[in-house]
Every structure is written in C-alpha cells, then in structure tokens.
Length: 129
Image (cartoon, rainbow, N blue to C red; front, top):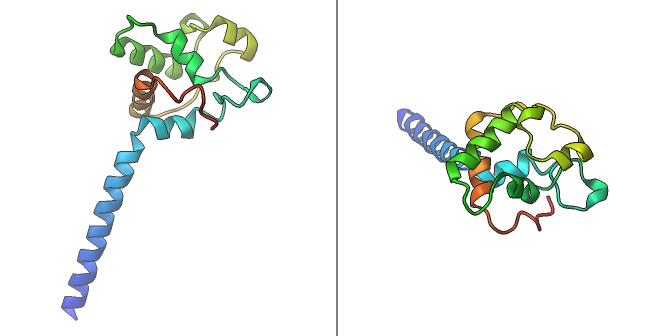
C-alpha cells in the first residue's frame, strides 16, 4: 500500500511541477499578457469599436529610432501605473477617447507587456484581438 501512496505522490509532484513551470512561462509572456489585458480596449477592429488607440499607435507615440529600450519600458509602465494628464504623450487620443482610466496591474506583468511592445515590429497593427 505504501508503494501506491509513494507512486501517487510522485505523480502529483511531477504534475504540479510541470503546471507551475508552464504557468510561470506564460504569466510573463508579454504577447499573451497584452492580449489578455490590453486588446479589449486597444483593439484594431476599426474606429467604430475602438475604446482607445491601437497598441501600434501607442508604440509610435512612445518611441522613435533613438528611444532606448529601458526609457520606453519605464515610460509605458509609469503611464499605466499612473495615467495622469501630465504624463500623457497622446494628446489627440486623450481628446478622442478621454484619459485612460487607472488600472491595477502587476508591475512585472506591465514590464513584460512593455518589453513585448518595444520588441514587436510587426503584428501590432494587424492584430484583431
């Protein structure tokens, strides 16, 4: 009987280890997090359905060819954690959609989203999420 419990315990331990590592790898996947947290408002399905500017436009307003990655990430994270008028870089979007409401996000997830946004050169404008 002890062998059965030992066998069952090892199976459960192995399963939970595998699940944890899968969850950990997807938790900080910026692309998945962006789809989960951002695209409900920052979609690209056309102007009739837009609640906020598409992520590609956000990216364009926060960086150019000389913007350091760390500066971009910091600016995006700072904005999302504290969306106040003085930090806004998208004045036209603010007039059209209003100031982004304050959201509560995990800081590390925001960093992963900002990293993905910085590193992504394609797919943002054509994403239909």
